[in-house]
Image (tube, rainbow, N blue to C red; front, side, top):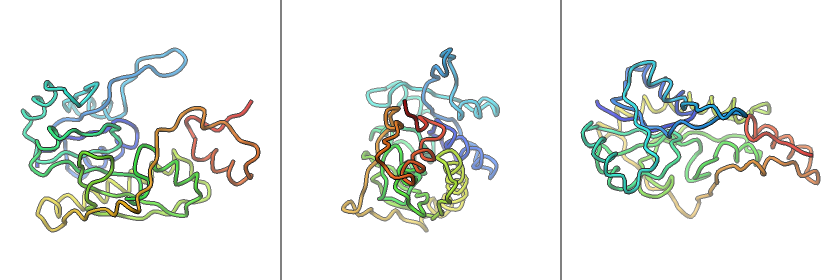
Length: 237
């Protein structure tokens, strides 16, 4: 099976690494462009690119997906059977969704339709949830809206931070993905439509959200510290 992997941060790199260990080597990886990091603003490649370079896998870093005929043609030339998405951070346009034979499937860090969007893990911790999970879903043109293919639940422990828990979710998601792919490709697993009336949404975390509101309870502040580690961290003046 030929597939292309779309993903950028550490969460995606963990999923990709586990897939490769299981024998699923991608034809190419697609990630966001390198970006300046730290006070010295050193141009740094994303974790998935570092992993791809290590194994000599082709890399694409388009700045945008919409109205990008060059990238559309590049993906068509690869003739992928499937595309896998994990924390890529962009909506996939229809002209790309139609290229792989089996479409795009996404590894999302929540039990959909709960916590659609960019920060499901942080919000589960902030809200004091006792458990969340990973959903493998068919990608469509809307954000985290497509049919659910498989799910697994994971308990959130009292000491879990965003960093530690996202690693757990990535490993669990990769394991679920390796079990799901054969049954999805064979037709044994069919996407089940989500109940949109039960959907909740999350947005990109901003630095100012880490500022501590001292009118909140100690428990709420503790959850902020855990949810916002390592970025933007909980902070005060």
